[in-house]
Image (cartoon, rainbow, N blue to C red; front, side):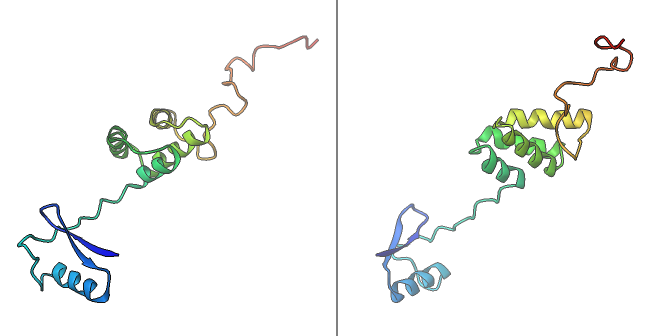
Length: 141
């Protein structure tokens, strides 16, 4: 088995997987020991952490694409992060796994207000009729 250390020229510096090999690579990485061949050790950069809405998108909807990443970043400027997360979860709950659906939920919440008890628009299944109080239904006598 071998240990590898990436170099700036794209090559790998290999060492035997032993205590001595591990110590050698640690010394080279720390700059105490020079890299054979005059190359330099590549600096490893940690990828940026995902925002909470982006992580929830990956969990609930699917893989992040560049266009969805941009759309999420724009949405984070317009809406609170917890709204975005809740809209993504609502979309997944309704099996409408798309950013467009979650975005429509956010636009509706922004326009009509957000009901924190539930996100159902009309719990009875149909919108309330403003004339229900004045219209008689059926043969009441």
